[in-house]
Length: 360
Image (cartoon, rainbow, N blue to C red; front, side, top):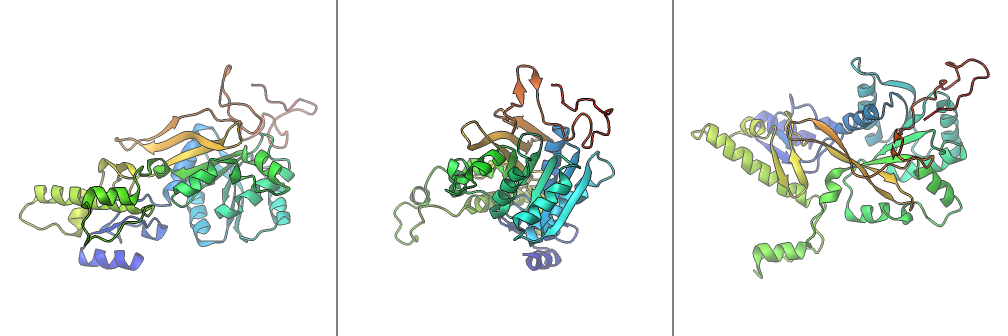
């Protein structure tokens, strides 16, 4: 896709992508005619830090592996955290960790982190998250004092959601199942918010509605590809941009830069949900934040998305249950696990013998 975008920019031809979210496509000074209808993966860092800011979590630690996607994501997180205009502080980072890191490797990292940070960002492949969380339980990090954050990097489909919102997500019939259950109660799990907009109709029903029984049309699959709705929204956005370009100057057939310009800051309700583009003609990110409830299954607790004024907002849709069995909304007000104890991570703010218990 990178080569296609570069060539299209050179030839002034518009390119609409409904699957490419890689960071190599972010620079629109070079990819000047590329429009993306799926949010770039780099937008994850902005959303995650926005949530951390709302929770007053400014002291962070991060573990990232050396696979390509994790390296890119960690780079964005690191750059955002280390910006001079924010209050975040990355106290400890382990990067380029082997994807196949052993339990002992993870224990060593946690041993270094536990006295320096209470909020831990995991930038690892999804199939390794359980290993990190189970090891956290072995290390005594799952009693509610430590909070783990993980972002899913692909678009969740219905199969993933069925597993994710069921106990089968952690109950694998293994001897460490109970540790996994306990550990996941200390994890906030981020996914793209497209997951809540899956089409209710099957592919065959949609094809029947559009084409009837025309024998010249190939038989449709019962379940459309998960990117099909993004393709629909790409075509729709192209039509909007083309019409606006023609309205602006009807004497010239729109070229790449014209379409790109009129694809910026657009909004409509698409097949993939609420659709907003930014000044770079990239789709604005929206995320669901999931938390494990009393029945030990993940459910939506926060929706993070941009509104029509391009302002990032958080909407609490359910009460967060923290790892110490306390809720976000309580009868005494809001409770959020702090990013450091009242006396500091090493009791540096308390006199000898003073209690380190946090009063709520």
